[in-house]
Amino acid sequence: MATISSLIEKINNGDNPLFKELYGTETAVLTEQAGRYASLMDDFKNTFNNDNVELFSSPGRTEIGGNHTDHNYGRVLAGAVNLDNIAVAAKNGSNTIRIKSQGYPEFQVDLGDMEIDESQFFTSSSLVKGICVRMKELGYQIGGFDACIEGRVPKGSGLSSSASFEVLMGAIVNHLFNEGKMSGVENAIIGQWSENNYFGKPCGLMDQTACSVGGLITIDFEDPANPIVKEVDFDFVATGYSLVITDVGGGHDDPASQAEYASLPTEMKSVAAELGADVLRKVTLKQIVEKIPEIREKTGDRAILRAYHFQGDNQRVVEQVASLENNDFQAFMKMVVESGYSSYMYNQNIFDVTHKDEQVVSLALALSEMVLKGTGAWRVHGGGFGGTIQAFVPQSELDEYVETLEHVYGKGSCHKLFIRAKGAIQLKF
Image (cartoon, rainbow, N blue to C red; front, side):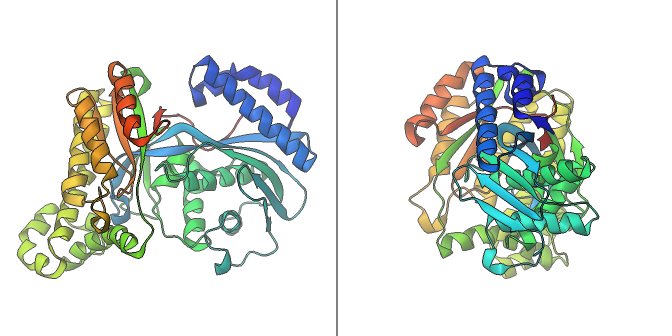
């Protein structure tokens, strides 16, 4: 533990190597981030009357390759980004976790009551409880702590704010009570377990892993209980391109739209089932093509097209990683565009047929192609049917690109990001 005054001195108004690794080198950004931490520490002291604290940060994530491949045990390429959730935390010597998160009601978690409570599904407290339950089951120490949290990973942005929160909580318990012994991958698996069992939401493991491990990583989910995580050695910053995520809005919560989204993994798995498998990773494209006449009678054509997309994007991840490791960024961007077209034509997660007049993603992709064709890359980002798109934009086109997209989707809808090397961490200066 360190005193707040000593931490502010070490932060040095943002002029320190760790901040530059997390937030870039722009002086104004570093100064603003320093103020952000100082303000949160002040809030912690006023709320919990404690001057000895630890600092934590957990990034959002961007999916770079492998669109809708993880749920069928495929491969993905993902990266941590420089938008993060931060926390000021300290042990409180009790059996209660007390959390104040800016913009949300304060809540507590009683570590004496560890049962699943379905009435608390979809709450932050249930996520925290589940993380502690699973860590204890795996032999880790848990205990009461206080925390103030401030988030910069926007909800609904496709940058995985919930996964970032989960692994932030895991990192706090890991460092406060376990000397940081837990690996980043295990933190991710525990976060996923909590979301599935205590939060009540089925999810894959890509988001948590990317947020927890950090950097640019490829994940192979062939054995989903033991995913193979490999770091990819590539410096995106050196390319001179910006990674731009644009919030295009859209998306609906009505039953018809939810069913449309749910149909993606279901239809993919229905094709696999016709070949005697439970997921598409266990079959080949050749096997699918040989059986198309029989399969389409059972599943319909869209399911086969989605299976075709899976096979293409799953292999494309391998080739994207190879191109980055060979420092061939142009080949990588070409495959980003190919992935985007595959999502549009075959996976069909660009617009919701129930609301076919609202095609926010389609329009954003058309505008992106208009500005970036021949110079950059663009694709749907994440689940689709609304939400966000992703683009790799050369500096020479950056102002025009942002102006074009924000002209339609509003000021501030474009987020200019970079891949951050650190995952969910305790800040040590």
